[in-house]
Image (cartoon, rainbow over all chains, first blue to last red; front, top):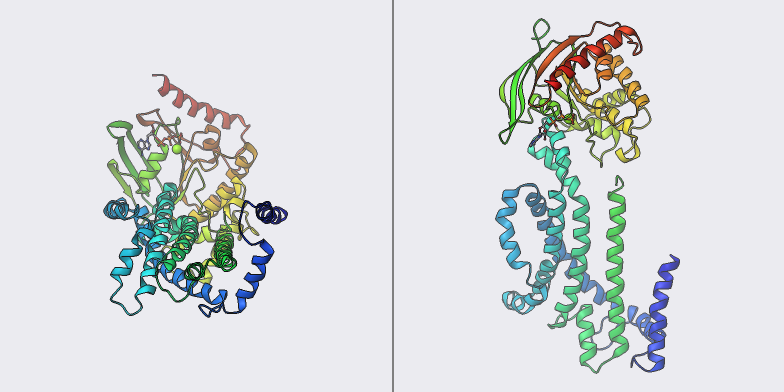
Length: 252
Length: 242
Ligand SMILES: Nc1ncnc2c1ncn2[C@@H]1O[C@H](COP(=O)(O)OP(=O)(O)OP(=O)(O)O)[C@@H](O)[C@H]1O
Ligand SMILES: [Mg+2]
C-alpha cells in the first residue's frame, strides 16, 4: 500500500516539476483534478454529458464486445487445447486474422455495419470483439493444452468418459488461462474502444469526448480528465479480475 | 462369479516402438490375494499395471474377472483444485450425481485411512503421506474387486512408509480385496505380500514366485522374514547377472 501511494506521488511530482520548469505546457495536476471532479457529476456543455455517462457508454460497448468474444474464445480455446485435430483445423484461419490489429479493422468495420440502424455502435462492439477474442483464445488454449497428462490418465483409469475428463480435468486446468485471457482481453478491448470512438460520431463515450474536446479548441483540462477516467476504469477492471482470480483459484 | 477360480490370469508382452520392454510376464492372481510384483527400475512394472488397467496396448492375453479396478499411483495424482473429500468422490462423480450417502461414505473412508478432519484440505495443504492416503481412499471408494498399487509409498520416509504398510494390511485384512502391489523394495514386498512375483530386468520375464507363509503382524527383524528377503533377493540377483 505504501509503495502504491509512493508510485502515484512520483507521477504527480514529476508532472508538477515538468510544468513548473516549463518543459510541459499543461495545466497543473490540482487544476485538472478540480476539472475532473466537476465533470464527474456535472455535464460538460458541448456534449451535454458528464464523465460517468461517457464512461457507461464506453463500458457498455466494451462489455458487449468482449463478453461475446469470451463466450466464443473460451470453449474454442479449450477444445483446441484438448484435441490436436480441432487445433489444426482452426489455427490457420486464426493465425491469418490475428496479426491484423483491431484498429486496422476500424474503417472496414464502419463500412460492414453501415447498413444497420445503430451501425456505429455495432462496428465498435465488433472492434472490441476482435481485440478481446485472440488473447483470450490463446491463453485458454495454452492452459488447456498444458493439462497434466498424468491427471488425464488417472481419470481414464477410473473409466471417465471424454465428457467427464473435459469437465473434471481439462476445464479446471484451463481456468487460470481463462482468467488471464479475460484480463488481457478486457484490457485490450478497453484500449480499442477508446480509439474506435475517436473515429466516428458516437454521441458519447470517453474516446469521443476527448476527441470533441480537442476539436472544439484544445481544452486540455477536459482532455486530461477524460484520459484519467480511462486510466481509472482500466485499472479498476484489472483489479476486479485479479480479485475474482484470488477467489476462484484458492487451491493454488 | 469369482471365489473358486483365479480373478486374473495374465500372459503378455510389450514393446515401445520396437523396443522390447516386457518379454513375457505371466502369472495368476486368486481372489483375496495380496500379490507384490518386484523388479528392477525400468523393467516394466508401471507398464504392467497400466496394461492391466486398460490404459496401454499389449500383445498376449489378460483374463480379468472384473471391471471394477482401483488404481493408486506412484505420484498421488490428486486434482489440485479439489479438496481431499472431493478427490475421494471423484470416481463416483464421473459416473453419477453425488448424493448425500456418497459423501457420508467418502468421509467414512477418509476416517479409515486416518484423515478425519482433513476433508476440506487442498492437496497442496497435505503432506506426501496424507496425499497418498487420499489416493488410496479414492481407489477404494469404488469398492474395487482388484486394487492396483504402483509403488505408492516410494516417496515417503522410512517411518511413514512402515506405518502406511501396517495400515494397508489392516485395511486388507478387513475386507480381503485382491491387491497387486508393485514395488522395488524387497522388505516392503515380504512385509505385505501373500505371494511375490519377481521380475527379471528388461526385457522382463517372471524370474520366479515366492509364497510368503508368515503370520501377521510380521516382524521385519525375525529370521524367517530375512530368509524370505534373501530368497527374493537371490531370484532378483540370479537373473540380473546372467
Ligand atoms: N510411453 C512410453 N513410450 C516409450 N517407452 C516407454 C513408455 N513407457 C515406458 N517406457 C519404457 O518402458 C520401460 C519400462 O518402464 P516402466 O515405467 O514400466 O518401468 P518401471 O519398472 O515401472 O520402473 P520404475 O521402478 O523406475 O518405476 C522403460 O525403459 C521406459 O523407458
Ligand atoms: Mg514405475
